[in-house]
Image (spheres, helix red, strand yellow):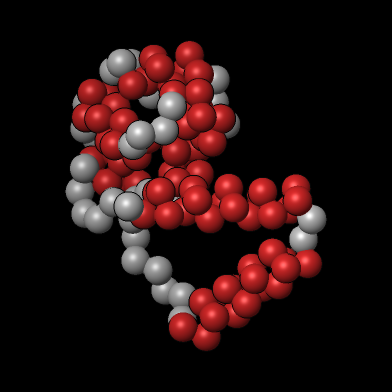
Length: 114
C-alpha cells in the first residue's frame, strides 16, 4: 500500500475546493479526524471505507494511486434515462426540502466527477 502521505494527497484531491468541515460532514467523520489524515496520519480502514463509499472513488486509486480515479459505470442509456426521469419527477413533485436534497446530491455528483 502507498504511504499515508500519498493517500492524504489523494483525499485532498477528492476534497477539491470544499471546506474541511463540509467534506468531513459529507464523509460522515469528525473535522479533526479528516484534518489528521490530511496532515499525513495513517488512516484507519473505516475512514478509507467511508471515502470510497461516499465519493465513489476507486479503491485502487485511493490506496495505491493506480488506475482511474472513478470506475467506469456499467449503466445503460435506458437505465440512465429512467433515473433522470425519476429525478425530474421528484423535483417537480417535491417540496422545498426535497428539492434542496436533490440539488445537494446532484451538486455533489458533479463535483466528484470533475
